[in-house]
Length: 617
Image (cartoon, rainbow, N blue to C red; front, side, top):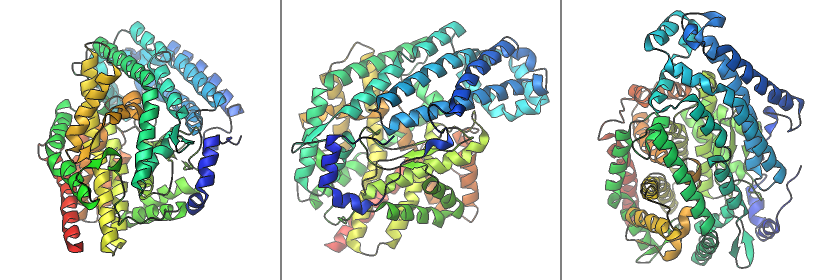
């Protein structure tokens, strides 16, 4: 069914018709590879099957896993894991389909109902599977070792079994896990959905025209400072009007997390995320310390330069991502963006470009900016038996090209890791950003190498520096903000002003004295979805960017087998620790100087910018 455009969307489209024509035909994804429709026979069959299969799985294996470690074949532990994986695969397919439909238009009530119903169905069905990982982790180490040694199928899942056992100290009794699981749909799941639907429904008044969030944020990158200021003030006005609901959502979810962490025995407020990421707290602390120490050399220094280039003593916060005067004014069409990214990927490895090309050719990308569509961008892996899907909101800016390169990097990674199967394909967040940031770097370098005009080169370099600051400095500031917020929430509920004050403190520290922050900016914490959906996710971006900077330096000086080692790393999925994956490249994230090396690349680009600026006079 075609999506009916909202009045504001029509107004925006009419006023920007020429710009939209420049972009060309923007694709919407085709979800038929998952299911032909909500009422399709295949979907109804899988819905029935997951219910019965999960019940039968519980009946067969509950209480019998210890004995299964001494058997092989269809009676061995490996057979139980394979059966569990098959059920997870089908449930993952159903959840992916419902989720992608919902995110394509969060304002469609039928999509929202379908999404909610599927969450409920999967919650009910998977309740029969909760015993499995709990019971598996209660098995004696000797018996686990015996199963792995004497059964080939169990040995196939060795990395998953050993990885799962890291969760053992934080697992609860089965009835408590059951309660947590079943109440998630009316607990944090419901608050997440409230945030999404509230955010999708917000409108921002620009000269009498009401725009959704994505288009309003996009105006902060316009060349005209008056437009940027209007967009910023419209954001402040609407965020302020909705501050109570975002404050309530944030307080509730922070308390919900505290309860869960307390029951599970996590010491630090971010330890559950570190465990999920399979990264040590000390490594993340070292990353945070290195980035914060680099604030003066990176963001403070760069924004001071940018203020000078724009002819002001201080930059208003809405000028932070303003284009330089040297930035080309024309938009990048969708076809040109596609070619730019595929050419960059092909220059590294033709097979990488071939995999990315499938996303364009087979309807795996949703790029159009529509009413109700989820803001931002993501690559959803779905399940290994299908393929990933990419969502972006493409508006033709150079940054949108980089976003496309980023999400396609995720997509390629997810395709390559799919061979590991549903249980082992997923990569921890710290390494999940590797391929995406590497794809961005390849695209940036390809564009820069083709740019001969010194002024254009300056604009491209400046944008890359800004993107890296946004990825590293800004995300570590986000992480710092979350740490302060969750720590303060443990002492009691926080007011909007208290949250805003925490936000302003970390923003002032990270952005530096060249950025002028007024009271309106206190509301800008409200729209960051990572704070809601994935607490402490954000440091993964900084981890990935610094890692890729070091990795790219290896690539520039490596022999011909770098691509082979790189693809082996991506294909590993979640089967190896970051130390194992980085070792073939001579990199070690536990070393104190590792992060400084990654940050030095950003500093080097700022040096290059300064030299170029001197040449231009």
